Length: 238
Image (tube, rainbow, N blue to C red; front, side):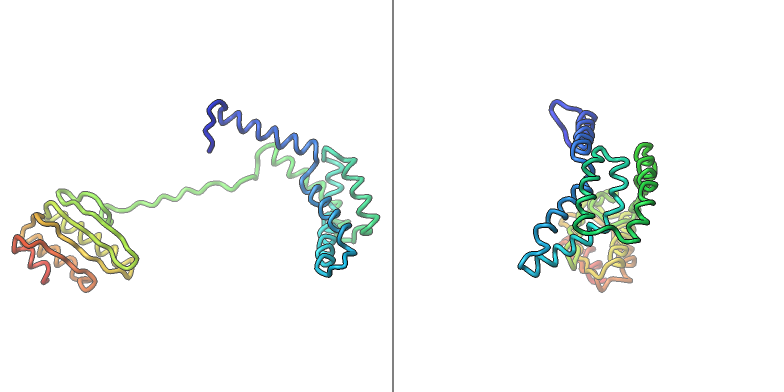
């Protein structure tokens, strides 16, 4: 995602990993630092004159008590076990020992941490597999482009679609144009306005075919035809 003038992508990722590792080794697990911040907040506000701050401190105390199991993990696997032990002792002194639930989890937590450590080291069970979904439009789909010698330009709005055609309409392009318009209308509640550019050529039988193909949803289609030749007038009245 970053193009650096000097460093390669691999070098940037290596420095990022090094930074995270240095932060972890020096400051310890981030969750332990969060508990320490909550604890400092509790010490400051648990006897505040503000009811709001006292309630906030009480919520922090609940979060801290739920975090008791992490101390066993931090002391066993963390880079700063002395700091973890010191924080746990201070919390136990001021907030009391953990209840039965956190004590049970404290015995389970090291096994869970060991499993996580294993999966991280071997890059297993980390991310869900990517699922590739491919969506393709058919050659009958309505879109701007070339239908043989017929050029189609589309402009979509919220409740209507403007379609401009120019060039030469033949039997094949008439079928494809009609199929695209009908497919578009069946998928929406929009209206379609077809504008035939001046100079667009078409034979009478191809215009009749286009009118027949559009007949099922003709009430939702308006057609503006060129002034010449007169054969186009049939399409407008059909």
